[in-house]
Image (tube, rainbow, N blue to C red; front, side, top):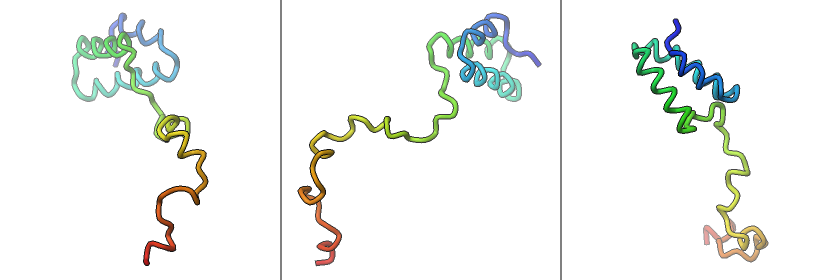
Length: 92
């Protein structure tokens, strides 16, 4: 069943392949939910225009996501210079 109108299909065609694939799958989900063609098309057009199509397949936290979370001082200090107690002193 083709749920999206021509405007929605044109908006999807302008996306990269991963985003277009995600939006195409939304068509079937919207149909299964009983959403009208007009509302489904408007929803997809809104996602595309707002550049808000969810990133499909990004489930792992890559090291690059943690850049800037820790101060440079913490990265350069050897473990012996930190103020955290060692495990050997934890039971004392």
